[in-house]
Image (cartoon, rainbow, N blue to C red; front, side, top):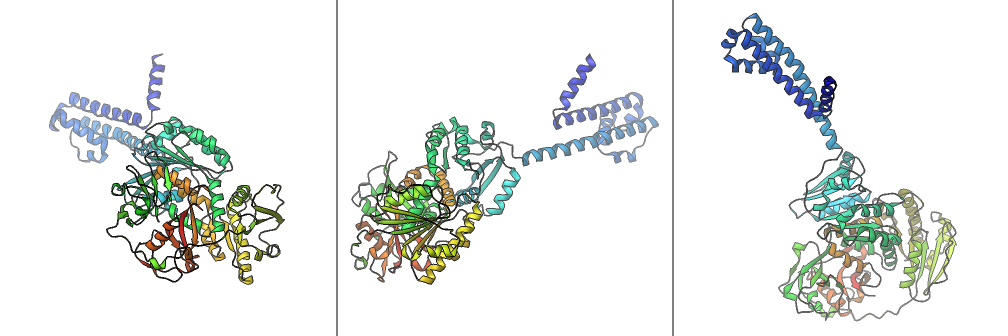
Length: 619
């Protein structure tokens, strides 16, 4: 019975892994050395005395277990040499086993580390839960945002191999600057796996939607798995995006009060509708959302307290004030010129970096004679052709009707019959026709010369690359028709993959709406500053102040040299806030596509009648 218990105890200790094996081998080495030394002292005392006594014998025995070559110079009696040979042979087996155990243990430890299952120890870092194509934009933007910080960390938790994630990020985002990216393998739905990325000490958490058909369901499940962590008063704030706006209430309930949710389809619809009326909107939005360009900052300016927003417009040498954030977290974009700035208010300033925002010592130069008279353009109905149909199309029609003037016309050309009814629109007269968008003859039959605006929607029943390829062919046909017929209609198109936008430049479409990239940029902005959520909500909401690209002739007399301060003053008199301009001759030149935001106030500037001024306005 005692043998069974002893064997069971031995087996239990051996199953504990490398530390237990090292312990047993160390014990065996100690017993071998002590036994050999004891026998030598007891049976060959003269040889023991000749080799330094008990401590010398003990040291000799230990060295021979570690290095078999040590015994080559031994001299003594037969019994002494036999014992040294015995301890050497025992050491060969024990040390070789010891080396094997160490090697195996190190390999196992390296394998565990490569699996990404160790817990990180970070503070004030950004956690990204999930993996999709958007991760590369997110990591790149976070690295750009943290260029001025001493050290920053992005921790990614996804149900993928750690090494594969790290290799993909190194290949797609080679320039990380001072930002460290740490990948961990785990399921964001498991609380134990969430602990791997030090969730409680994080600054912010981003939930990425996966590239699957049930992306919204997965996002909601992850929000639920965060549980009380997102509800803690001092916990990290959580940002996420859902595709279907119908899922927003459920996502908000799952995320709790500290979660900020974005409706991806809603944002795409608003951009498409606004861009079809004013080309270049998506380029402006990409610049506002990307950390490589100009972005919004909250700036407390006590010296301006008691003055008006109109005075603040010309108060900065670098930076463009666009609104105010009050102490109760409410915001006011594009306020009236006489709107007061109270104690505790923060200015919302558009700038390249917060370190570059500074007040001017002298007022900027305003060229009064260059300011154009107030424009008088009566509202007029428009004719729009929408090619294609997808799940966002019904929302697009509703928003088109809200922005359209009475008597406007919308014609829908799709490859399949549309079952929806179009009789309830107040301002739009909607008609449908069958058309294969990639067929040149079908497009010619649409008589595109009778339309001012064209919208090309991406098919959502095809793969990303196939849908973009079909869109590209359609755009090539439309642009060739415009060139052949000399008709200046505008073309706005959806692109799924931002990598395809560069290819699509040959079509010279007026604007491309890449909703996935814009969502990634917006999520990244909110992870860095959660207070900007209200700013972007107002900007992208049809009822608030919006971004418009209006003719430069509304602000400056064509061909007259002025300054951007002159444009800002002209816009202020119209109840608008100028934030930049777009040069017509550079509409198709990446990466800015002619967009210039937050230009120097006093630099001489001349705009043509074809150029645009970027403003925030109510209408």
